Image 1 (spheres, helix red, strand yellow):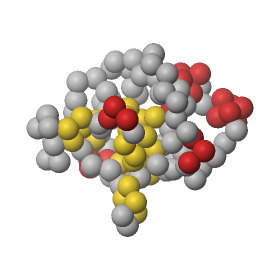
Image 2 (cartoon, rainbow, N blue to C red; image 1 turned 90 degrees about the vertical axis):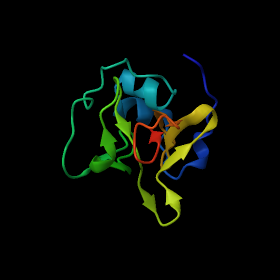
Image 3 (cartoon, rainbow, N blue to C red; image 1 turned 30 degrees about the vertical axis):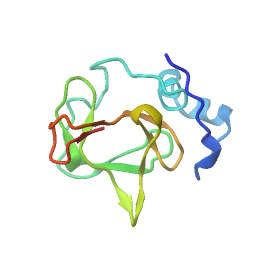
Image 4 (tube, rainbow, N blue to C red; image 1 turned 180 degrees about the horizontal axis):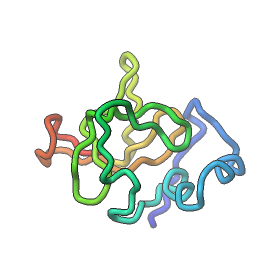
Length: 124
């Protein structure tokens, strides 16, 4: 995949590389810390639509999306709106529409606008 040069030092939640590797599986590390892409339709949560609760970052357990914001999409998990604390958004947007956790900087996927698939016209 495409290598991104993300400056993880700007995020509040910090672990040493060895700690990340111990905490995550090899695939999770590749996706979260090296901005890889999960295999299409592979996600364990693709068909999981809880009525209550929220989805959190696999890296640091920071709350990211309400379960109410999740909607059915074509093979990856999809969300229409994310959590905020005051003005601070829990999900960050980096170059090329990349979406990340604003607590630890882990890569979450990409955001697409203007597809009319959700009320907010966003798909994360």
